[in-house]
Image (cartoon, rainbow, N blue to C red; front, side):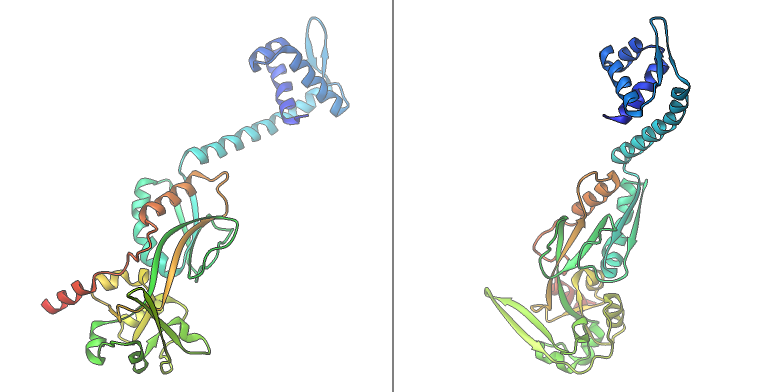
Length: 319
């Protein structure tokens, strides 16, 4: 039997004053009300109500039972109302996990637009390191990786990004602009791949439909870090040539603070995904932020963060 339904029926009989009125209030047949209360009594092994042709009344144990039941029904009703409100209204917290560079360079500057649309939602961003797989403890994980996703979860691609080489125009004016990856061996390189024991990086290009690859073995780098923001800051300081995802250096490239080196070559192709553990019972706040991400990033195959290099060169020449 549905014990919660039976509790509600008993309470309604008492509040209505009779089985007949309770049946009208609940829009069910009187026989159904009688049967539900009788089944509850059989399950509990006690008589909850005395029934006569003139009146129905709770027994002593029925009164004590109903005193305990009413708070339970109120708690259930409040929990149901809260759950329904969370579905209907976009409010509350959304927990988002993202790589530090993507959080700082892409998410942060978009949050004002999201807050303008959904002022009752607080976005809680965790950005402690690389994110290459879903974290089930987060509402949304921004996953950035080269290989394909695999797992039982919801994923929507936001964008593609190339890992490119870049340096300040002043650094390149002093030390020359490489025209081939092998020339990078004469420069200090700031690249995460150089943390490995192999200390080599591979550049790739696509020309006339054919892929080419060149492996570079530079001298010991002046700085090692897995944090893209540290390499970004070091490149801006003129330390050397950095290999960074285009999404991390978009503003620096557009403002001519950094210049792309070897624009026909790149180090890696990345895919950026917004992932959720499940789509069932999705809170309105999480759905709103996912929809916002999908509206901000179109998921195209073309890297949206590499500006027109020819235009940037022309602007420097005219400055």
